Image (cartoon, rainbow, N blue to C red; front, top):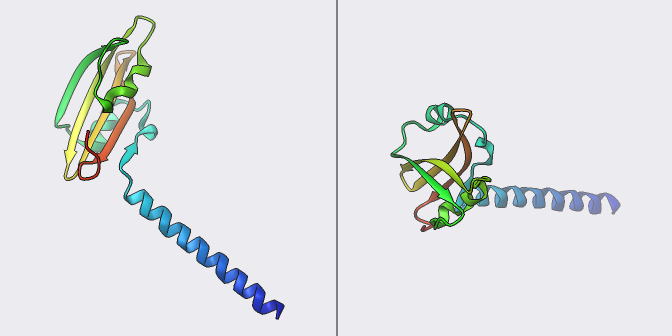
Length: 125
């Protein structure tokens, strides 16, 4: 009797693990946005090699009084003691996905500070 109960318990645990994995994979593949923390501090050359030539390449300055679009709002944390920072923004559009990667200039090199990728069919900015 204890063997049957133990086997049922093992089967229930196994099924819970399988259901959890399926749920995790579903959430991962259907997420609305992708965070680019893994690209932080990478040089712009690395990004060009990974993503190719962007659709748009823009340089702009923000300060503490800048009005920013929602997707750029997180860049305000980069404003330095001079109350401004120069940002380089690369933009790609691939199918249903839009990708933004932002850089600041450190030691004469453009370095990734943030990025965002989202599905245009799910998220509207």
